[in-house]
Length: 89
Length: 509
Image (cartoon, rainbow over all chains, first blue to last red):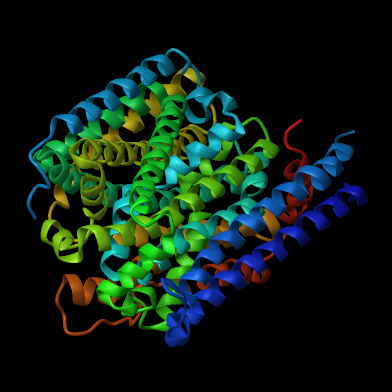
């Protein structure tokens, strides 16, 4: 079976996006965890009454998770799906 | 521990209403469950939005609703680390797992591995990891259910465990995936609605400004509640827990199974997007619920009812909405347990009947009727086992078991699954060795950890310093798979991957 260059291209693009986004999520989350582990005083600093840096960053991790997921779904719905549709033909 | 309240009429009314509604759904679903495809996948007719809700319903356990709210109420910021950890696996599921899983498999995640590798050894190894995850997850849920229902409704522990087991059995046995899906959807709506209402009632007292609430907590209990504290002392343990939570989500058999209930990969992708939105929203609410309970109810009042803090959310409901709202939240917590337990049992039944009986023992020669009979028999067996385990572990500290389930899922299932999807050179032997190493090393290291040796067996020290083995076991499972594939390459299996690459993207045509 000879490799199909179109399939290879779709596959490469799909994995490039998936791996980059996975790396972005892991860096965000483990960056947060490592700050929690190694720099507690920094995360405890109060930005405004009721809001510490740690809580702000924690909420931001959730927002980043949403944003990356939204970005992926949008990318896949527009770019990936149309190239998969071309593969089907 | 004393019961929270004498069984109140509202709680019992909501409780009965939910049981009647869910059994009604089951009767309706049972008429539509005629083939194995219906039983395991609801005929692949679930929409993206419905599956998003059902995924959220399958995932958000009573442990996250009551446990995390309690943890935040008692230790502030540290509880939030869990809230965040339980969400961050979902993007990983979206990017790496959901679509290939839907395109390559039929009923279970082991299908994906079995499609490109040798069926029998793969399915047996995958079943060992899956059943270990399901067993520990089920024990944690059943023991939690017994304690919770005793506290909320004043029922004896054993009666509570039997009720949960029997009602869940009815859903799965008669209604299969169709009933399970709808129970999970109803539960997700109740839980999201109930938690939103509760958070709204709390915030109304603080001018709808969460910062005013957090500030009140800091002024009563010191600014330490907004900062990392004692829960995270060892950095390696913190990273290890984080890894297990993140990658374990992508290896939970009952979650992975839900991607087969939708029409195609595109729908699977959209559904996991919805799920991430719902679950993230829910965990943001736990910030408000936890700090709300800390300020409005107070730590002493919470620990007086339950030392672990598990009653923080129900107490908060009583505090801001009175007895009727407490009753409603108690019924929501009960619905939450039932939906999770049903999802777990269904995926266990799929492993036993589809992976082991039909595919391995019968060599895929079972007809529709036999597949359904075996699946239903497996369901009855699993329900009986979960009731027995729930009663056996009464009074035991099982809080670590959910963590253990995530650690096994991350070490046994995730590495083999992700390599099967991504890496052409993965061999049958390597995948089996990886799954078995992941399962066994996690079990051994948890046994040797301070959680078992010091906290439960009261030994002076533990052989293994970490409470969470993920940082060792996950890389180990990856390494075993990669090394074994390189040392003993199987070119025919790599060629099979090339044949499947098209199906991975396009699906079955």
